[in-house]
Length: 133
Image (cartoon, rainbow, N blue to C red):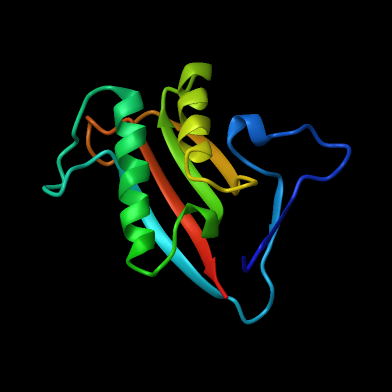
């Protein structure tokens, strides 16, 4: 692994919520930036109006984008997630999607609540920064 995840003593354990507090990347490590992925099929259209299904598809799309660089979710150091009208059920769905990625410790993550995204049917979007040693 080309990065280190740390959840410092004195801060709550964020891992049940699908994120960690800090990540460090050593000098000379290649960074891969993945633009916002949403719950779309190959035609770019949203696959479902269900939030959970959009989250699963968005993470599947993220996996495809990472695989194009020989990476997977365990290589991700930072996620930014955008949620239309966030609530605890939606946050739980995101945490479950991150946990299913197989990382021993989840990446850092910021969840941003928004009124809308690029198209009216999009309810969730995720972008990532990954590392390769």
